Image 1 (tube, rainbow, N blue to C red):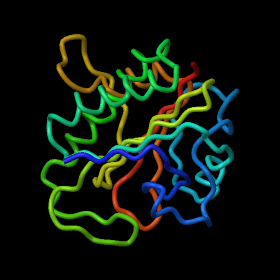
Image 2: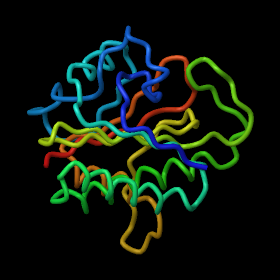
Image 3: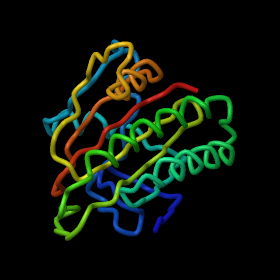
Amino acid sequence: MSRRTDVVTGMTDTPASGVSEEHGSSIGLAFIGKPRGYYSLSSKEGVRQLQSVTWPLQSYLELGALPGAVPSARLHARLILYEWGIQESGGTIELIVSELITNAVQVSQGLERSQYHGRWRPGTPPVRLWIESDREQVLVRVWDGNDELPERQEPGLDAEHGRGLVIVEGLSAKFGVYKPDRSSGKVVWALCEC
């Protein structure tokens, strides 16, 4: 079952109805101009740095950690970007969404419970997708319930797996990961310029 909400604010990583006003807005311009690369944001200061911009265009989608989540998330991204008039970057954003959701679904397999905003939930956790934009940039964030941080791999030419973060790095201006407060798992994010 999926759920779509078009308004999300804050690093609280929930639909707008559950947003705490104490949190700022999402990842943004704080990283523009820094070298391309991977940012691991384990400190509270790093997460605060990401809260410097309010995104006027925001979308949220929650999906079961199942193979069908990947095409559903890609379609969602395509339709949202079309609705926002940002089709030119659509193929790139769709590919980033696809790679991040694929990784989230894979690492969610076998999990028997997760914590999200202080509430423990039994069963395989869902994957959560946020797409945010100011029409000059698009931010993609994906939450999964697995606590293990992703590691960039250097796959061989004949490898069938392991290229996801390499692709995300190549297509985005910045990307990284952070662990949200009061939740298990992590959020992997990528920022792209339109």
